[in-house]
Amino acid sequence: MKADTDILSGKGLTKVFGFGAQRTVAVDQVDFSFKKAEIVSIVGESGSGKTTLAKMLLGLLKPSEGEIYFEGKLRDIRTHKKKREYWKNIQAIFQDPFSSYNIFRKIDAVLLDCIRMRDGRRLPYDQKRAMMQEACSFVNLKFDELTNKYPFELSGGQQQRLMIARIFLLKPKILLADEPTSMIDACSRATILDMLMNLRNDIGMTLIFITHDIGLAYFVSDSVYIMEHGKFVESGSADDVILNPKEAYTQRLLSDVPKLHEEWDLSTV
Ligand SMILES: Nc1ncnc2c1ncn2[C@@H]1O[C@H](COP(=O)(O)OP(=O)(O)OP(=O)(O)O)[C@@H](O)[C@H]1O
Ligand SMILES: [Mg+2]
Image (cartoon, rainbow, N blue to C red; front, side, top):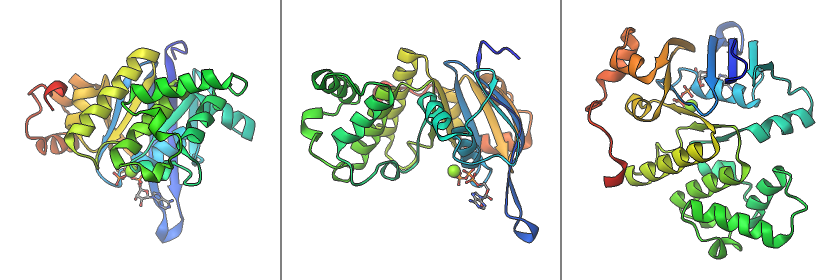
């Protein structure tokens, strides 16, 4: 294993829910290796196990079997302290941005928490404020208009952007995006993708997209993993997997994409 370039990898990772007649193998013996600053997409139909895998990667769900390696070493999150340390490195944005906020915390408190997580607790307030302003302007939000608001007072699009402002402050090494853009219009989707790509270029973050949209995967990714019934049925570079699919399942996912070969142009949306 190339420990210097693999940021996150896994061997035989498995999650089984329930038992007896209720038994579901949600993730079934998957192997993967994600590189530093790489953009990876995990593509599969509803119920194929994508979110379950994401939760194991985040340390929110305990694998039934298999190992996860972070920066080449067996991941150890057995204590609360180690878990918090791990979460400085890996963060996620979810389908529903609202679910990721504590509704009793105002927006400046949400952002201050991120600065604190990055060991900025003792910085003078002016400096913290400048950091919050910078993060908000990165996502086209005006910090001064937001300080006294709660996340639920923002529009859906603003909530999405606040989520990215948090990531801007946290600067994790890995960001998992579980369909962050599926429920919003094409214009906001393009904006958010653009912001995430800029962030990846700025801080060398590894981006993992989880989606059913194989067209999106082709457009944004370096590598693609195709997931069916908890297994990776096909993986490789985006070009290899999507322009030259070997599995019937991948071909079927592709048959739903109207125009894959036309370049998507972010600037016109
Ligand atoms: N907590 C749970 N308890 C029992 N079964 C679960 C649990 N979470 C997920 N599952 C099952 O595991 C399988 C995979 O679910 P998962 O949410 O990972 O799919 P997904 O690929 O994210 O789907 P979608 O695209 O709809 O979000 C499904 O059959 C689901 O019913
Ligand atoms: Mg899901």
